[in-house]
Length: 157
Length: 147
Image (cartoon, rainbow over all chains, first blue to last red; front, side):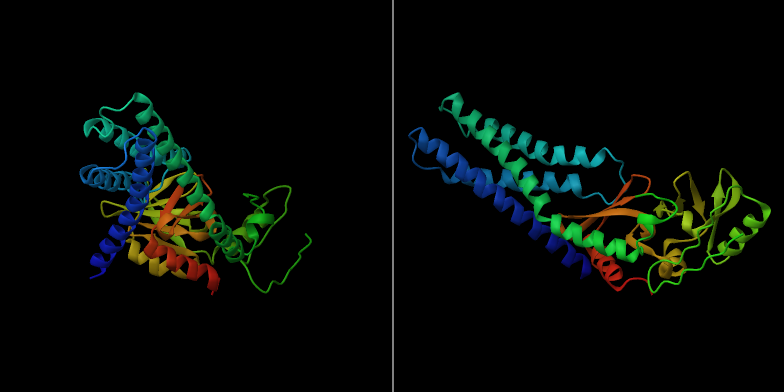
């Protein structure tokens, strides 16, 4: 039962983020098409985008699923991969599935730029969102450690 | 030698010895103070050694073998993670995932992450991800403080 709960929670997390990506991707795609005189998106493309967004989110989760200890450089690499993996998936999918076939190059270029910027902004926002909680946690940690770290003989902080 | 005693109401008890040279008398005093610290036995390069609990950053279980890590070295211990959890649980050691026990005193900073996970940075610069399941317990321990 515990494992079921764990998997359901993980699945819900994945679907939530996939939906956030899906809405953004679809909105950006529709707007760009609309600017270029195409009013409407086929249900097939909407479905394809949903699947791609789900895969993008799984890619992002895989980057952070590890519970192992990692070295100083890894957090930076992980954060870069968090944007890079879904970006690559999105670009590959749009060409393979022909989302912009018959449309000028400027459409897919602007779409990719906007979506990559969106992913980077989402990442920054996530970090900002957890800043307060991080501060609370560190206060608790310092209290737990009795402030020894700040003026103790080791002087490690 | 001047001896000062400072009584504290909370926090970690600590003895600081300020000396110009490590004389035999001071060494004796250090040994006496360290007698209360638990010693973990294990193997390092084939030799049996003892590690003071205060030196240990974390324990890791790999293929049913448990390793203790300090800033300088790692050694294979003779204990299981469950045994270590029972032995050191009240001394600031915390089971932070299926295969890790971390010494909370050796955590330099914590960072809250997506999915209620916590990234713990240790004194040696390594990071450890505390999963959602264990993060809740860590928060409780930190809030309650030392027993």
